[in-house]
Length: 129
Ligand SMILES: [Zn+2]
Image (cartoon, rainbow, N blue to C red):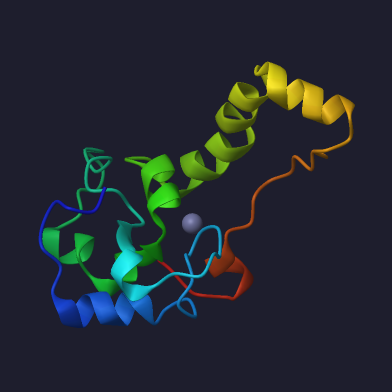
């Protein structure tokens, strides 16, 4: 999550400019005041002994992306690839268990397109490390 350390306003503004004022993940429109600053490499997932990020790396603009509340919440402490995977596996499996979802599928109200997710920032070519 993103409230580990206060991020300076200057950095927040720069992060907001990265993805056309949209969430870097789902691509929804994002007001500045609703933006959450996501750590691409999570602060908490950083206990891999092979490479521990310094605080400077952790809070560098390169490791930060603008996110909406929902994406930031769902990405949680995971990294990019576990988030991508969770959207098509865990999330979909949980949805498919519900009676309402299965009924909506039967009636053709919902159509599934389950394929690897491409994040918005990838579509627009924002480079990360
Ligand atoms: Zn989003």
